[in-house]
Length: 196
Image 1 (cartoon, rainbow, N blue to C red):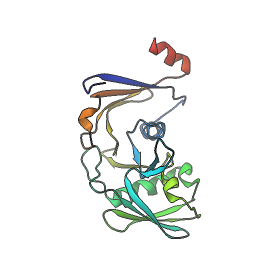
Image 2 (tube, helix red, strand yellow):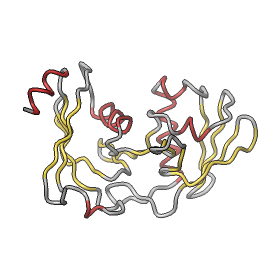
Image 3 (cartoon, helix red, strand yellow):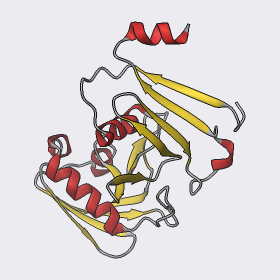
């Protein structure tokens, strides 16, 4: 598929009400890569760094995460540890799924590329915890969520679709389709009908 083609990805997301942020988190979970996490699971089932470079255990409840250098959001803002701290802290405070594995997290920046995470409950695999679908990294500007993935949101139509464009600050942006649409369908039959 060349970069001038228009592609449409379809999804049968069977939710009654989806706001912008929830849909974006779901797209990260489903692999459409608008939003990214510190770690992810690769095709071989291995936990690998996505936005993070490494994680180091300090003690039973304390971890340090180093971010990859030169990583930026789709608006060109360079990713810092404070951005990751803000996203993880907000998610841990407002979403119970972000407390499922380790409970409450206290997250602080130790510099521009390093953050410290202190958890309520111990885990032997913090990289796996941070690869969970809920832990996407984002910033908010003027009421919009901005992410680090290979696509940026051009337009969002509530309950209907995302219209995406390549994130020009992401490697190989010129190799991606210029337009990508993620559409919500109420059920599987609607997907079948749309594909005919």
